[in-house]
Length: 610
Image: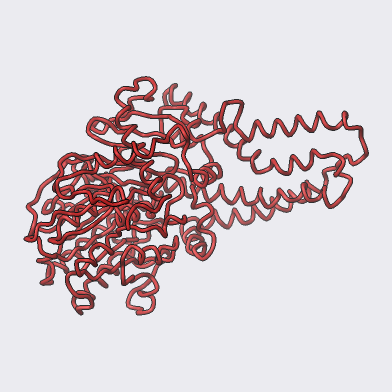
């Protein structure tokens, strides 16, 4: 390890204490404040309240940090709003997954928590409080000093504003900067990102005007209405109404399928079946996820609107807003709409939201369980089982053409279960190897699925689109962590090609609409990738937003200006803070702000769609 690397690690470690103390002070402030009111300490109930009440918070904090440790190992980032939002009916699924992948760690943690709780209670009982009456001037200055020190620690120091994620940028390594933070702090930040800093606000008229200019393309035109991004397609009747199948690949990074990154490890091709399809389809190697979680991906892909930074809109009141969801749109052209998922769509409360986006039929975990044709795992049913169900439904004419079929896969989700050892090509000693093994299985399932599907007559009129919801996040640089596979597979319609247009998930709805010979009225921030050569990618995830276009990959935080300039072409390297060289960042910064502000403005006013 080089001397500079040791210095960076040391710097990150030391700065981490600042965030740790901030979280502790924020949690304990109210109890410190109560303890400082000396005259009330003569009451036993009052003393016991501020002495013992912190114990549940401390135990929860330890639990949260253990969960964060497991999550970070898997995702190379800390917990966000997941730290709270999954408590409830979804908690059992998460707990089962944790026991499956980290059984001994969880058992050890339970014993540690029990012992630590006992020690905390004993220690707290042993604390003696001076309850004797004292003059004001004797107790107040000291206690005021303690309260003020707690406030300083809670805000992270003497800087102008409260400590934020931007203060964690202390090295050139994104991973080391992540290590500065802790899971409790990042969870709190996710919930706080309901409104971004005034530093990142644009005038609403300016934001919408910039956005409208960016999203114009030859295949659609704006509709005069109170809805600023409402457009109508210019249809090509010769397209007819093909069946559309959209396969959402859980956690697939382009790194393992792209020619640029070879997709070969130790001489073993990781996704050979997908690669053979790629050679016969239209592949987009510079395609990006708009967010970093499944909920972000579903919002972007199925509504055409990028999700918000911070807590996903599916967990907010904005999920009730009007959207031109993909299902809703295609139903206006007579399509039947079905959503398949081997897990539970009730997870993250997605069932009503998917229906709100226009899907009449949802075939998920409960449907599989009811029919009992396949064996379930911890998280749900394997990819091949879901594909076989789709084939069976086609063979049995369960749904009429034209039809929209959306399938969200599962097998590449942690804990990366595979049905048998034959797919265990790499020792399952670490999560990355487990993920790669699950990717090998998922790829094999795709190969078998397409082989069976192409035996059906419907395959000659079906456009199959493969796209990932987000990447796996592990061992990926800034570019790889946003770069996902996007493949349009319809050999009967499209000649094989590689399209190097910069694109993202919000482009999918306009692209699908352009494949159908019907006029649609839709609201999306994307463009048809086949009808507009100019491309860009907007990103919003956690407290980060950004913009990718030819020449630059720009990232910034929502709380204050911390713009960073990266290369969007190989070699993928950081070019340093934008403050050092502001000119290249100015335009992508403005475009990213315009998209972020436009989404927020239209969500708040419910003006995305009629």
